[in-house]
Length: 112
Image (spheres, rainbow, N blue to C red):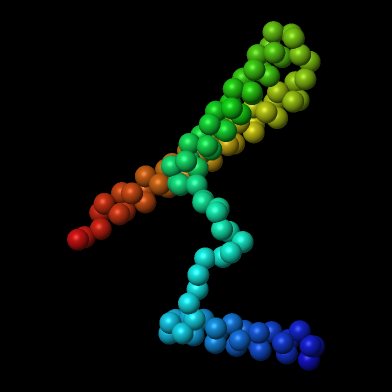
């Protein structure tokens, strides 16, 4: 047996005993001092930020494609990559929206 396989169960048992003490209330877990002063953004703020980033990707892609179409730029590969990136991020946003709507419907259908 290797040394790692011996210490792994011991570490696991130590973690389980800590979690047991936490569940009993013997150990109080407070906020992490390293995170002091850090306030995570709300869900709506994160969604607004991501939608604006996706919008910026769409606008940049559109500008690159129109520059190639008008002959101002010869970077067809860059325009196509930007277009695909914008399309992929928009598709991901639509999938997230669909999952959120589905989750909301599931919550609304729950019996009281």
